[in-house]
Length: 356
Image (cartoon, rainbow, N blue to C red):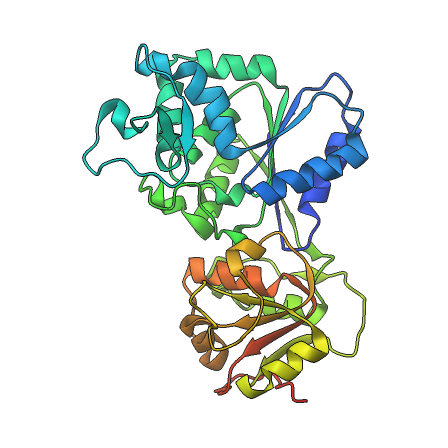
């Protein structure tokens, strides 16, 4: 069966689709489910336990764990004889001019997260097919959730998987490309973040991948879905989102909110407050969540403290660069019923103001 990619909008039940697929599998099918955040791993394990708990051949794993367990630990000696991986360093960085083993491992033997993709890719070559053969003997199928978060050398690894005998299924939303396994990496920079769609289309052209697009959101109110479609420049040619959310409340849609009314709004609607980074929104005594952290979550209502770029986009329609656009898209599409954007001057925006 051909390798498959589903590109779906926010709120389209992508993760649920993985769960339902696993629940339909034959008991002897050996499946690895990969995702990028701890929260997503926990959510997948919980849902799979409910729907496919009797299937013993399904394993959920993070991307870094995958690279450590199946690439770095068993195959490091193929490139560095006698060396062993003794740990994992998420925050550590090698010296700028480090070469050889010190490029990949610190003095305690812990693998640098930022170099793990590069190391794994080099071990693919050094093992002369043994690494891929081992994976083929372990798994019949590998599912990758949030595939748009691949970066740098990860694309080489994904390409090798597509050329293996393992069936690969991937799901993601290019418009939510706000994370990266190695944001400092320069390898395959042309496919970074939202531009990952180029990589997928190239593999589709080569016959290595079948792409299906899903445009239905079951989360976002029609007005939120319509607004979210305007965030990316039209040149991206993303299909329009179709909302299946038929819930109606007293306060539905996208609104602007003056700073002086923030307190009253929060008291009345209890939205989840979102900001771009920890330094934003300090003038408000609110329980904030950063855009990236909120990815994968659903809230009835959100309040957004905008960046300067988002403010310019709302006021005068200025184009957002891909990464800021993806971050704003994530923030907006966390909401089911309403989005409030804090902004005193509306400029040319047609969005209505909420007032007490």
